[in-house]
Every structure is written in C-alpha cells, then in structure tokens.
Amino acid sequence: MPANNLTGSSPAATRAQLLHLGTGTPGAATIRAGDGTATAISFVTGGFKVTGTFEVTGAMVVGGAITALGVPVIKRVTSDVTAATTTQVAITELDFTPVSGAVYLLEMALIATSAATTTGVQIVNTGGAGTLAMAEPTSAFSISAIGGTYAATGAPVATNNFGILLQGVFTASSTAALQFQVKSEVAASAVVIKAGSVLQITRIS
Image (cartoon, rainbow, N blue to C red; front, side):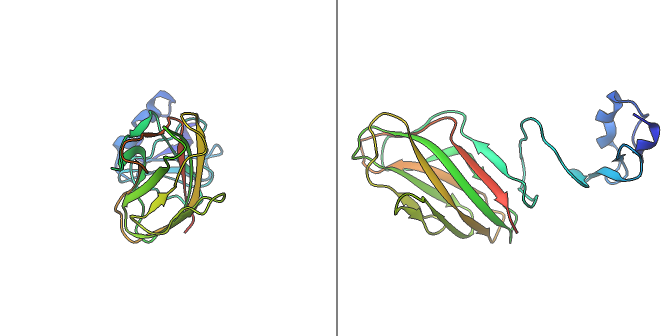
C-alpha cells in the first residue's frame, strides 16, 4: 500500500500494521482512497466513519445503536426458542437499540411450529418507546403499538414448520432497546420460534 495513503498518527505503511491505526487520537488517523486524494475511513471516538461506499462481504455484528440510513441490518435467531405457556419468552437475538427520533422499517420472517392447530403463535414486543405498527400481509393479525401483541389464533399445521411474516414501521422516541418475544395462545400447548428466523432493520429517517 502506498505510504501516502496513510496519514495522521498511523504507523508505517504496511498492510499488517493497519490493525494498529485505531490506537491513535480519534480523528487523527485516516485511510485514504487508492489514489491518495480522498479520505475513505476516519477513526472517531468509539469507532470509525466511512466516506463513500461501505461494502460488507461477510457477517457484520452491530453492538450499538443502528445509525446508518438505508443500510439493512439482519438479526438472526441462532437457537430454537420455546414458549410452553401463555407467558412470553424473549427471542434473544430479535432486539435492537434505536437512535432517538429515528424511523425504522422492520421486516420479520419467522419459522414457527405449534403443538396443535388450535394453538396460535403470538408475538409480543417489550421495551422501546415511540410508535410501532406491524402487520402480516396475509392475515388480519397485527401489532398496533409498543407492548402490543400479534395475537394469532390457531396454526396452519401441527408440529411442522410454517412461516410468519410481519412488516411495519417503528419511530423511536428514546434509545430504549426494542425486544420481540413469543408466547403460546394456549396455556399448556407449546409453540416454538425456530433457529434461522430473522429480523431485518433498516433506518429510513
């Protein structure tokens, strides 16, 4: 990498030493574009800022608030979550911390099972603050507010996988995390949200 593509408090211009760029004063270390004429990455307090296109070819883990406009972030369930009663259980990975005042498009695709066709899988949201409206295009069930419930009655099949699709908009009025949970419609009949279920979050304003 050409030496003039590294500036500020960064170490000598070698590829291996790029790992040490973040140890300098925030804002002092930058990585310039290939021709050396434009700053592509600047290190700031707590992270870095990208000027221009930011391409991720592998997995990206978001540990803080989702702030990038128009960049979808996908949260994926990694192990089955079972709700054996009408008490709600957190779907651990299906949560996120918003920016206060931001608006998010939420798209949820769940893989579910139910012990019986008379037992619905119900989705609840907790935490968060602001306004939330989500609906399933193929049914009359919806979530109309923070703390609301997608109160499905019955299931299309017993024990086999079926899908639940929920889409909507969340306008955050604080940075309180929004968490999705699951519960059974029937007290002694279990429902499961399966590993591989996802929540896609896109900040739109």
